[in-house]
Image 1: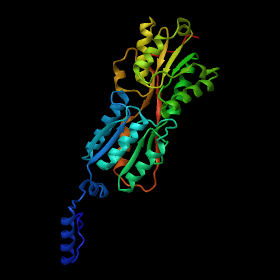
Image 2 (image 1 turned 90 degrees about the horizontal axis):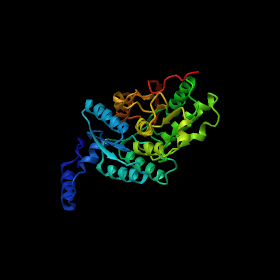
Image 3 (image 1 turned 120 degrees about the vertical axis):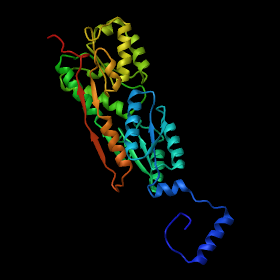
Image 4 (image 1 turned 135 degrees about the horizontal axis):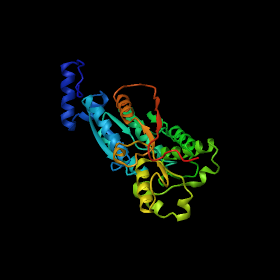
Length: 318
């Protein structure tokens, strides 16, 4: 009766309920009713960093997919902080959107993980939908791409071109997807017969400037010993590229370089950057579909991530 139901009740009973509601100052919670009925027009997107080209592209794709369904997208940014992610989810529960999409990478052993799971499960219990992108650490619907296999295949192909002495730039922030990229790349090198592939793995600040500063801090002998720099994101690879040029090195004549994500800004990079392509449009389409449909059994879909060899990693002379 008070929530707009079409059910019929006796007029005397109806009047008593309305009188009690007026006495108590009751007003219907319209957002909650909309969410419970699946009629809210808002999807909440939680991402790690809006200034990161990968996440800004992801947000744009999700907004485009949502718009085709007549839905709106609100964006919240965690700044790669697990506690902030938890706080944002709590706030979003109060706003009661139709769905929450978490598009940031999961963290390695965060103390707040169970609290996050509890918050999301309470949200689902009230009719909301939860979808994760590129993280398989939580028990919810997931759209993933194979970070480990994409990096592994890249390493195999680069080793086939002659690259063996490879510097690997991981993430100073403990993120699961970045950890899997490092592990996959090292595994590919080891499969190719590269000894001690893990000895050249480093974890600078997870940013363009972090990669650049790390390269600037290397000794001349360390740089001369390298054949390739692999960074776990294109953004970091571009930072490393800037640092290498500041050190007077030519790419690819003196050193090869590769990244991961295949962000759109690579179109303007010279030489064209070797990377691992992720089909963000397909990932976004699947995430929005799952956010707007009901499936009682959470499932995971893994989208392919595959190497794209470009001018920054030509075959080495034999």
